[in-house]
Length: 163
Image (tube, rainbow, N blue to C red):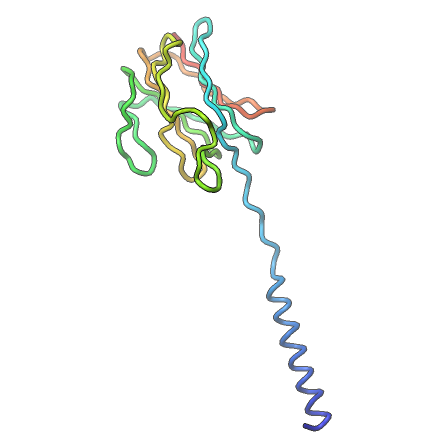
C-alpha cells in the first residue's frame, strides 16, 4: 500500500475512532431523583387527637394529601384492604417509597396493625407503595377532623385525627 493511501486510511480510521469516542461520551446522564423511603410508622395518643407519624429518610420533603373513602384499596391491584374501622382515611405521600432498590421493605414494622393505644384510629395499613407514592390507610371509629402535614430535618409525615 502506498504512503498516501496509508495516510488516507489512517485518517479515516482516526475519524471513525474519534466519532466513536464522541458517541460513547454523549450527554451526561441525569442522576435518578432521590426518593425518601419510609423507615418507621409511629402512633401516639395526644389530648384531643390521635397522631400517626411516618418517618422518612433524607431527600425532598414529600407532598401529602388525604381523602375519606368507603373502603381501602391496594394500589396497583385494586384489591380491597380489610382493616378494622367504621370509616377510612387514605393518605397519599409523594415522592416516597416503602422499599429499597431491591424491593425489600425499608421499615421494620408490619404492613398492617391495630392501634390499641389510640381513641379514634383503630388500625393502620400500608395500602400502596407504587411509582414513588406511598399510600397509608387508617381505620377510624368516627368521622372527625383530619390534619395531614410534613415536617423536615428529619422528614416526617404527620397525620392527626381528632377524637
